[in-house]
Amino acid sequence: MLCKKVSLTVYYDIIYTLILMKRFCFLLFLLSSLTIIAQSTQGALSEIGFYTMDTALDEAAIEKELKTVFPDAVFVEESPEVINKTMIYIEAITEVEEDYPAHDTEYLEYFAEGFSKEQKDQLGDSQNAFIVVLYYKNKDVFTHTKKLFDWVYKKIKNTDFIVYDGDVREYYIPETWKRDRVDAWENGIPNVLQQLTLHSYRKYEYCRSITFGMQRFGLPDLVIDDSPCSNSNNAGQLLAVIAQLLLEGNEIKINSLKIDLDAIKSAEFKKAIDDIVYENATKKATVNFNTSVPQEEGDPLNIIYQVSFKNKDYENTQAYENETYKNLFGIEDEITHVDHNDEILAASERAKEKLPELRALFNEGLDQATLLLKAPFAADDGRNEWMWIEVTRWRSTEIQGILQNDPFYIKDLKSGAKVTVQQGDIFDYILYKADGTTEGNETGKLILKYGN
Image 1 (cartoon, rainbow, N blue to C red):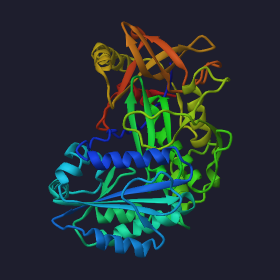
Image 2: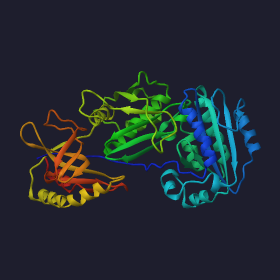
Image 3: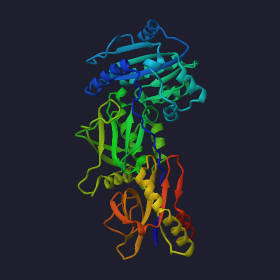
Image 4: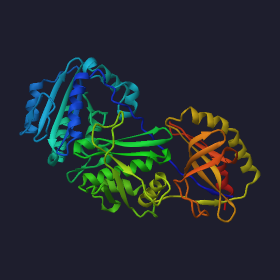
């Protein structure tokens, strides 16, 4: 028996749509602003919201402070049609619950890192809020965002104020704002690992990963669609690499970008990348883009570029996606030779007894879970090579999925290929749950014990 060892870590963020419907007037204002940004290549903006509890911030005082930070700024009362200079919109909110309510506690579980329960409760009870929207030309994206971030920290330091970063839709306390906005810069360039937010979520049988926060740097946000959910980590890593390269001045030319991980300038970013790259990686790839992407509900209100994995030499986009990840990050994939003994067969029988339950679970909707099954594939020498597939469709006893392993003994089959197997042939399963735990793969432990 030929078996592949699977080593997958799947992490999901839950994506939320913009649900602040009570912020109607300001939301219309912001939508108008972001529509201008999405249609323009000449400007950018940053939206910052302060929740100041019992403290009311004075508009005249804030205007005076911001005028010191941005001497050439003009203050506006409506969204500009063209961003040809630095402009600032400010608004004090006294009816927070009606005009600028914070998200609910479920949202804060995901997008309020470092908050205590007391701080989350304070946020919901805040009696005052203040909005700042900074508009600036593309040539000023780094200087102006850094100045804004520093001013925000000066404003919230040693207070109980909470900041809402409207570009990434996350909440910050002073400590996390300093870490992710003030300190995460190197030679005047931000580290995207702190600056951006990545949302990954299941969309039908595949997963979708998208960035939030590139519009404040005058750049498109990035999305990967129709990706196997077990690729969510790699998809996020690729989007972060592309974003960092764009921030460092690399340009997408003719809808294409050449990636070389060794060419990244940020030392902190490179250190993080080195920790997840295997020795067999080439660290290079060429990535193509679809630059005409319609926005979906909940997407950043920005130009969006979709990473395209269409390639005439590959049967499907998922296969070329896997090839791209292998080139950039390398792969850890081993084969174990083992005979079926009674202990392994008994463990497999227990897994097979779970299959009807797993089929029902899959067809009810996995949401943030991912299901892998181990199935036999006919090797070129007549034996079976046992590999994992990520299930994408399970009707009756026929199962469709995406192959997770590169075969050792099947020349014309690669990981990422769309395959069909029969329920009666399944040997084991792995269920990756939304809470990070896993179930199944009892045979895997035994194969490692008795293999080779």
